[in-house]
Each structure stands twice: as structure tokens, then as C-alpha cells.
Length: 262
Image (cartoon, rainbow, N blue to C red; front, side, top):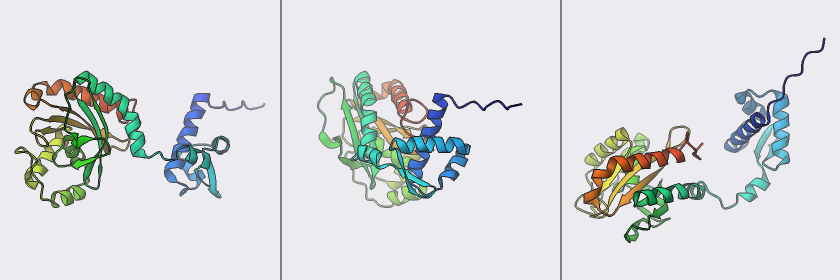
């Protein structure tokens, strides 16, 4: 009696497996034999060959050497000039534009580079008055005095954060700027515990900012987003509502929502 043929995976299941295999190859960059990557996924040999042939035929992967594959040249050429930072900014911008408009504020996205915050996105509501230009896109600002900077510092590995705090002096930009490394360390501990940061008139006297982290799939903080307001004295009363909207936006941009971090 003939055994019934095993059902082939559905189109969606096959696509998901192919994309999973491609992601593993792209991240591994040819270091691990293809069979080992497939074993991690529990792929049978026949499925592995079929998916590999499909990905290679589409130019998404190419054989580097026997049993080792890399991202294919056609795909690499199509993505020429694209960096993680540029794509992060592009994917975040529509959500931050909506957030800024809803809150009547300015929304920022920033990452840490060489102990400084690099601002990748700045979107302001039409009602927001003209602001100082210190947070222009693709410019940098000291981390210790900004909301985004405090978030990124709070989630640095302990040794890196200790090195940063020992590397002062920290210049006072206003009378409210935190310049004492001990106080700054305590502030960063509070930021991590509460999972948000404030800039309460520390960069400019009448500027108020709330910032929250963006999470990657392996629970690292890769970036942070913020809302800033030009009326510091009035804003604390509305922290709860603005924080809720800011966190909802961060959840959509981070892993687990509609996010793009993996």
C-alpha cells in the first residue's frame, strides 16, 4: 500500500520559511554552513534545496563557497546607498509626523554615535512656533542634556556608561542642566526604571521634552523618539497623555507592533 504523500507547505508558510532563511543568511554573511542554518529552523533537506534555489534564482542570495551563501549582488546593488540609519529615518518619519501633529509638538528620532545624539528625524506640527536650530536633522547634540540622550545613555552597557560619566566635564547650557556625574547617574537610573526621560529646560530655558526608547528584537535600545514643547512651564500637567501617545508610537516602531526592528 502506497504511503500518502506529505503535504507541501502552504504558500504563506513556504514564504515565511524562505524569508526566515534569507534573514539568517543576510545576518550570518556566509560564516555558517547553510545546512547548519537550516537545522536551526528545523528544515528538511528537500525544503532547504527548494528555498535555496528560489532565493538564488531571484538574486537574493549567491553561493560564496561550498555550502556557504551570502546576499546576492543584484540585491546588494538595489540597496546601494541604503544604511540602517537612513532606512530607520525613512520608516519612522510618517509616524513621527502624525505624532507631532496630534500633540502640537516637535517629534524627534535620534541614535547614539560617538557619545553624541545624532538627530535623524525632526517633524514639527504646523502650529509649533519657530525653534532654535540645535536639533536639525543630521546634526549632533550632547547626550547628557537631552531627553533622547538620557534614554540612550540609560540603556548603554554599564561599562560604556561609566566611561561616559567619567569623561566630563559636562557644560551647563542653562541653570537646570545636570552637570554633576553622580546626579546624572542617579537620573539615568530613574530613566531606566520609569522607561522615559525628560529634558526640563536643560538645553534651552523654555524647552520641555519627553523621550522613550525604541526596542530591537533582542531587547536592545537601538534609538529613541521624543516630543518637545516650547512652553516648559505648562507641559508637566499633560505628561500622562503625551507619554501614552509617545509610547504607543514607539511600540508601533519597535519589534512586536507593526515595527521594523528585527
